[in-house]
Every structure is written in C-alpha cells, then in structure tokens.
Length: 169
Image 1 (cartoon, rainbow, N blue to C red):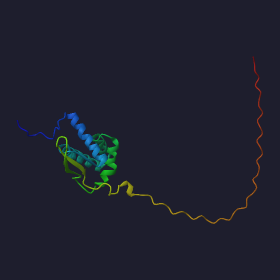
Image 2 (image 1 turned 60 degrees about the horizontal axis):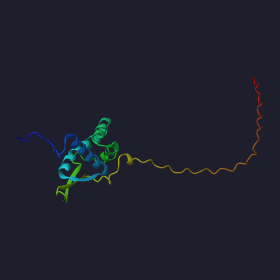
Image 3 (image 1 turned 135 degrees about the vertical axis):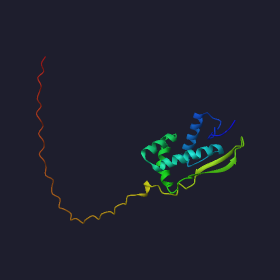
Image 4 (image 1 turned 45 degrees about the vertical axis):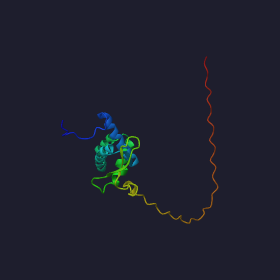
C-alpha cells in the first residue's frame, strides 16, 4: 500500500471526534493563550489556529462568522477577533510556537506546549488605545447672593363637588 496523498493525523479517532478535538484545543488555546498537549495533537492544532488568526485579522463580518464556526464558543471567537488579532497585526504568519516539554508519566508520550510567539499582555489593544480626554473642571463664576423673595402662596384648589348618583332599583 502507498501513503501518497493522505494528509493529517488520525489521532486514533473517527472524523467527527477528531474535528471536535481540534476545535476544542483551538478554543482552549484562544481562551488561555497557551495549552499543553501531546506533540501530534499540537502539530495538528497549529495550522488550524493559524488559519483562524488570518481570518480574524481581516475582521469583517464574513470572516468573523467563519472564526465563530471554527471555535467552540462565541466568546472565544470574539476574543480572538477583538483582542488577540489586533496585537498580532505586525506579523504575517508564524503566530504560534510549539515547545517540547516532558514525557508523560503514564504512557511516556511526548508533551508539547503551544503558545503565541508575541507577548499578548504587553501590546495594547487597538480599541483601548483611544481614551476620552477628561475635561478640565470649569471654574464657577462668583455670583452675588440674590435676596430671597418671600414665596407667594397659591390659592388652594377648591374641591370638586361630588355628584351623587341616583341608584335605581
């Protein structure tokens, strides 16, 4: 048998389970900005998230909807488009890095940490850069105290006459 033309890793899962796994890893990566997983899973999730970042950097409605479709939660999709993508605007590609960490104790699997290359906490958010300038307090003009006039009493309103309704039996 040949292996030509087969792309991607199966990760010992069916197609729908594999897609859900990649989607969940991508969601966690956006949410926590760094995840630790096995090396083959890390190698699968990086190109997936890179494509989502490229769409998020465009930021129009269609690409925002595609990012929402590619992640599990809408909140993480909005975080990617509104907070993370503007901080990554200086880079064309290569937004993520994979670092090998330790071998897992139970099955000796190679673990890897996936994180963003740029420091997301240091760069300012594009929307937060524009802050309204507080106006200087206006000085109050020194006014002369006005003489108080006695309040004129209004005539009390006369009570309306009640019309007794005739009861017919």
